[in-house]
Length: 111
Image (cartoon, rainbow, N blue to C red; front, side):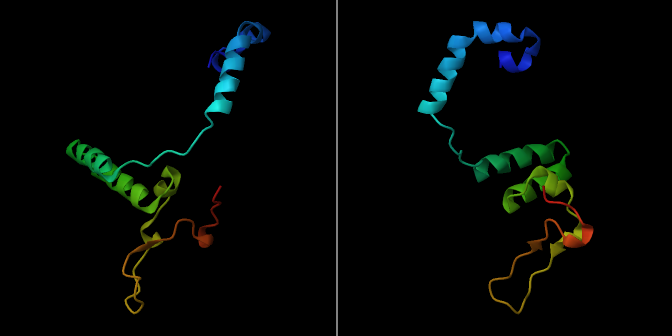
């Protein structure tokens, strides 16, 4: 963090923090990064409840959509009403609403 935030230190920080760099490198090798578990549904329900009680109903709904549809925050903010597709009643297993995340008609890039 010191090397990142205090760039004006230059090579001085590199000389002083040699042992720290080596220790961090060794720690990364011993404990590589791993994926984390997602937020439990009960916690999200508590967060949404707090948001609604603070008068943030639209933001709470956005959090719920992000959680249920596994969206990135930027994807949720670009959703429009016409992106919600009604379920097909004739097809079994399609009883839920579908979301079109990046319709090709808009010409938006995904990344």
